[in-house]
Image (cartoon, rainbow, N blue to C red; front, side):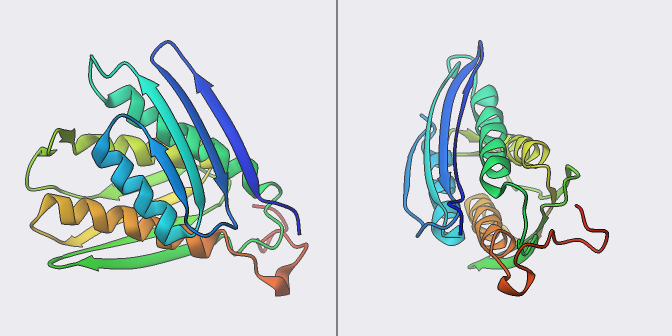
Length: 197
C-alpha cells in the first residue's frame, strides 16, 4: 500500500499557507492559523476523520479573515487531491449525520472529479466570538473546488451558532473518513461504473 500523504504550500500576496496531511493517520493535528475558532474546527476534522493534519497560516488578517480562511480551504483541497492520487480502491462516497445538543447537520461528499457545493446552513447570528460565519462557506467552497469533489452540507436543526458550526465540521470529518477509506474488494479499480471518475 502506498503512503497517502501530501504537503502543499500556497504563497500569495495575501497569505502564506502550508498544509500536510496523512489520510491513513490517527487524527493527530497541529494547527496554527491565527484564527482560534477555525483551529478548533479543523482539529475536529482531523479527530473525526482520522486524518493527521498539520496546518500553518499567515494572512492579511489586519484586513479581515476572508483570504486566510478561503486559502486554507483551497490548500487543504489540493493536499487531498495529491494524497488520493489515482483514487484506485477508493470508497469515493461518504456521508455523516452529527448531532450536538439541539443541532444536527449532514454532510455528503463524493470525490467525483467534478467540483461542486450545495451549502444550506443558516446561523442565528453573524459571528461566533470574532469569527464571521459567512467564511465557513468560503472554506468549503475552496475545498470542494480544489479537492475536485462534490460536497453537500445541510444543517437540519439548530439554534446555537457554535453548535451548528461544530456539527458541520464534525460531520465533514466523518464523511471524509468514509470517502477516503479503501475498499479492498475494489483494489486497483477506479470507483466508477464508467472506469473513470
